[in-house]
Amino acid sequence: MIAAVLKETNIGENRVVATPQTVKEMIKSGLTVRVQSGAGDASYFSDQAYAEAGAEIAADATATVHGANIILKVDVPSLEEVEFIPDGSAFVSLFQTTRETEKVNALTNKKVTGFSMHLIPRTTLAQSMDALSSQANIAGYKSVLIGAAHLPVYMPLLMTAAGTIPPAKVLILGAGVAGLQAIATAKRLGAQVEAFDVRPEVKEQVESLGAKFVEVASDGDDGVGEGGYAKETSDDYKQRQQALIKQHIAKSDLVITTALIPGRPAPLLIPKDMVEGMKPGSAIIDLAAENGGNCELTQSGEVIEHNGVKIDGTLNLPATMQVHASQLYAKNVSTFVTYMMKDGELNFDLDDEIISGAMFTHQGEITHEPTREAVNA
Image (tube, rainbow, N blue to C red; front, side):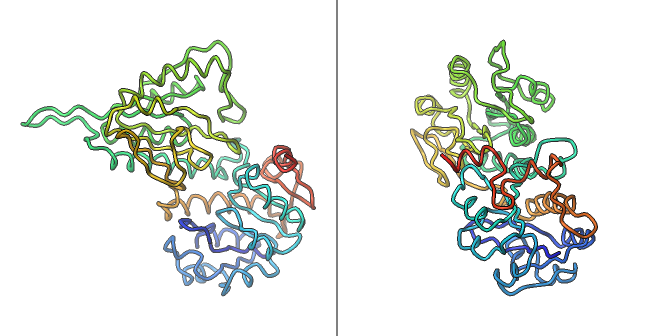
C-alpha cells in the first residue's frame, strides 16, 4: 500500500501534509510512503530528511501518485491534480466539500474515496485527528500578534515617568479554539480582554483565561450546535446580540472575529455602521474571511482601511507559521491514516463513526448528505 505526499501548489500554502516523523509512523503501520521532491521545502523539511525517514522521493506529482493507494494533501486539489489521481484510490485533505462541489464531482467520477479533515467528528476518540482545532489554535495566536502590529497603541498597561498608559481593549467574537487561544495570547500581552459567544457554556472557559464574558440573555438553546460547533441563531437573538456587540465594539482597540460555521457562509457580526462607530486607529482581524467574513466590509485576502479602522481579511494564517502548523496537521493526518490501516491494508469500515464521518465520496457515490445537497443545488 502506497501513500503519496504531494507538494502544495496554491500560492501562500507553505504547509506540508507529512513530516519526516509522521513518515516513520505511516511506514510503521505498513505503508510505503512516496514524497514529491520539494514538498517540504516551504516548511523547512528537506528531501534528504524524508529519505532518511524511509520515504521514496519522486520527481514530480505524476510520478508521486502513480500506483498510489492513498493521496495526501493539505489543500483542496486543483481540477488538474484530480485528473492524475488514480481511479479508485483514496484522497485526504482539508476539503470544504459543500463549497468545492465541482471537485467533489470530479473525485466521484473517478470513484475516489474522499476524506475531508474538515469532517473529522469532534469526539474524544478523534481528538488527535482534529485538524480544524490544531490549525484554529495557530490562527487564534497569530491573529493577536498581527492585530497588535496594526494598532497605534501599546497592548499592556504601562506606568512610566511620562505618565500612565492604559491597556488596549481587545474584544474576541467567538470563543471556540481560535477564540480561546486569542484570549490567552492577548492576556499574555497585557491587554484588557472581553469575549462574546452564542454558546453560554463557554463562559467558564473564557473567564478561566482572565477575560470578561459578554453575554446575551437567552432562555433557549440559541447558537448551541452539535459536536461543539456553534449554529445559526434566531432573528430575535441576533437583534439583541447586535445591540450588545455595538456597545462593546465602540470601546475596543482590537476586535478579532472567529465565528465560522463549517461549510456555511460566515455569520455577519459587524455591519458597516458598527465599523463606523469604532475609534480611528482601531483594527479588526477577521478569521472568517475565507467564508465571506464576520465583518460586512471584510475583503477576503486583503487589508483595507475604512474611516480610520483597519480591517484585515488575511487568509490561511496557519500557513504563516508553517513549521508548527505542518507538524500538527501532519500528525492529525498520520493518526487518521494509521487508524484506517489493518493488517497492512486500508480498511474503510463504514460502521466506524470516524471513518464514515470524514468520508464524503466512496465507490462513485457522494456519501456525505450536506455535500450531496450542495452538489445537487
